[in-house]
Length: 236
Image 1 (cartoon, rainbow, N blue to C red):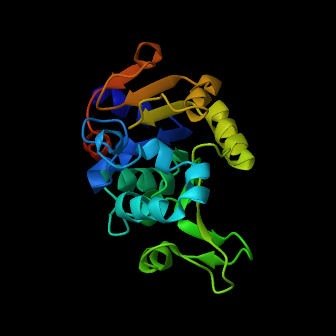
Image 2 (cartoon, rainbow, N blue to C red; image 1 turned 180 degrees about the horizontal axis):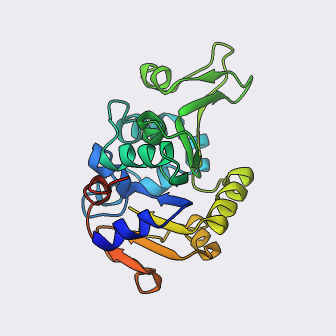
């Protein structure tokens, strides 16, 4: 913790790159841990359910899983989200790059957030393009339909879909320009996002994650602990 505090104190341009482990302390399940979504029993594996082809062919089953497991609208930002918003406000943090779709960074007050996998809070009719809130999708109680009759789709990147090119470009540019990159709450096994770390050219590469990752040996500082607990102790 002392080393992490020293790194943050001496940094002028920090970028935070986070995954599911940033939101687990807000009660949102991750995918790969022992009690994560991939280890729960459904009629189909979760990675099949949240694919584009499954969404199109089995829309009702998709929304049953999506509303039950991925729309955590009552979740509140935890110590990690709040600390990152404070760091941005005080000019220490350039941006947050997140693989999460829950919108908790913005709810905590972060302004510059690149959402690699989209957001549950943006939903659009596939026919006319009209926007809907996550609350409206959940309240539909099944397959949400637009007033024009079209199917409403969440603006989240499903399996078989590509990440937004503009979001990728901005994320890579931010990583390449920062002096400290803090990676947290991610197994660094989901590509292409995990590959973005290779663009870092700064001074300190910090990793905060509950479990070991393939990148541990390449980092300047590794802390195996919960993200909220670690960041919550930082003084800005």
